[in-house]
Length: 196
Image (tube, rainbow, N blue to C red):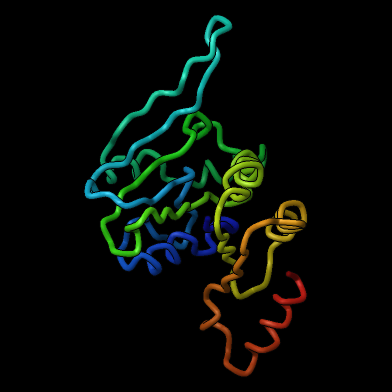
């Protein structure tokens, strides 16, 4: 599971790990849906799993639909209005119906059952809770991406509430460290270590 706050570079890190551009990359937040990347040949489509719902007192299983990668990126792109809503309410209502998405990738890294999970920014409290309570607890490893400017308040809050007694391997990846002058890097890394 790759985790971190909005715009810290999670999608860029995943694309670099896999060796191809699977996820959209932007300096602005762009991943709004919990997305599983797994081995498969159909790289042109995304499968969406919708949330279960109650109807007339009965639990109705969420629908499963397929759409093109381009349509998925357009439909579920995180906008500035979404960001405002997330800051104000702790979530984005228009994405709440989607449980998660599955993308396929035929690169060698993904063979043998490897699945990489790209998470939206942890500022989305509902997603952060789902990650903590379910997915991250079952993952073999967590890659926590932070920027070179040290951990943000949402980073710290999430780490304190979620990683105490965490059974998983947690790796902290510092993105954009190359933007820090070489002679200042030891001080920046020491600050990050203290925060962690």
